[in-house]
Image (tube, rainbow, N blue to C red; front, top):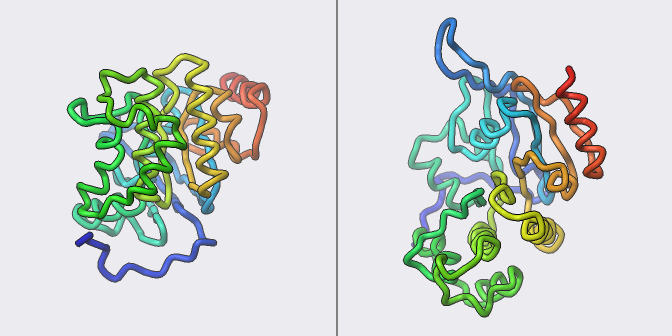
Length: 255
């Protein structure tokens, strides 16, 4: 049987997927301390595609790790699907991520000994959940890999491996999907295909997605773009063109 969180509160589909309140993250102590995040306030609604941008060292990766429950803030709180992440122990946090969080990484993180289909369904099997063959087939069709389902990662291109990773992230129907530079290891044409898949998962499945990226063309796919600088959200804008995104980045670089 699948383990569930004890005393799990009811979750209204109209509420936020993830929220941060006065989140700060400090690394180190004393004179060598670095404030990676400073008082971040954020709410991401269900069904929204949010991009996070900022120069190197702005805190965007730290923010994603804290929102995903992979790191803990020094101060402040984070909630996912109504659960206060910062109040959970390690075991409960693992269960929450298993139920509510999907991940896509830059370097795919597929297991080399498993086929594409086995990698896709791995999260369900690890959780002890029954594999839904119809849903698996739908995901394979969605990412265009029905004819590659029995191939291992070494037999797939980089783009195909990332497609498997996207399907794997969607297989447990997570409350929120976190994508960390998902096109950073791909050529521009393949990257465009991956971005369209992410956009389609939002439009088709209402899949809430938060993507960290340094590419204006990637951010332009999102419904909302957050710009970070020095550990703070300094701009919060709606859907924008790649040209407009680049202009904001250049403006921030001058300040």
